[in-house]
Image 1: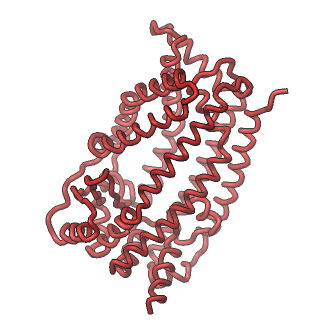
Image 2 (image 1 turned 90 degrees about the vertical axis):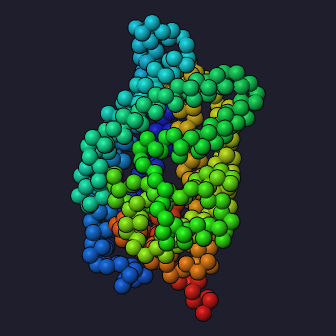
Length: 424
């Protein structure tokens, strides 16, 4: 008797949905609390708290609906054999175009084209509602419907240009990898990640946003001085026009070796009137670099990727596994999809572990910025970002521990204040 892999996967998907819904309900209850956490009393204004509470609750309601629809669709696709049916249909479509349906690469690309169309149809209503109802209602959305669809079309075009060669290469590697398949797949993905990290900020990101050098002035001088003091190889300092789409704010850095760049959202500059607050946020980001957090995270991702491919090589020839999901052939892409579904339990555990590490890194980066003398400015900057982004003020500890890669503001401020008390 064959093991019911598909039924087990669907069952676990539903169990995880129920567990995460329980956490969502706990978080929803925390969001409904009418008062600020004690740590934030006198720090966050009552007006900002009420706006944050309304925004968070509306997003929470939307999340419940979205997740329910998602689990229904995903479970139905697996349980009712829609996945193998769609795979066969995507193959029979090829002869009408004069193409060979026996060619696995062409069959796979036809299948992915159908999946992309389906995902756009099912996701579009939620994206439109989230952007033009929820985000607009709370003052965040700045993009027009034309800009929304222009970005959508650009994303689809990029997928059409970049997807086929990548998918084709993976299929060829799997078909010819032999006993060293895991190594070849990992090496390909490693090189691909380096290439994408190189071309994304230069060729892809500018398709969606405008990047301009930060103007000469006090802010630029302070950031350059900070970078120089830490021997951070800053080559370019940009401002991105995030305000054309949203009033949410952020800052990030990227680049290899001696070619580092820092990007500030124009909304961050607008919201933080005090330059010291912005510099403190940058000091935090540079702390990640100085403490090698970026390198550790990259290495962890590479190890996990290699282990995943190693696991895939162990099951890719299992006829029982493919039959359980309704397939009488063993296509490469389908094997990867099925494998991803079968390791969902491990993925959740790994994700939880990575969140714990990430939260630890955030505390360390805060402490690094504080040691540089930016404790008060960082505190003010974190509060300002929390206020302007209307982030949740009350968080359930179980929910945040499971979902958050960054500690809640209450915990970060407490850590900064605790360090002040130790110094006293």
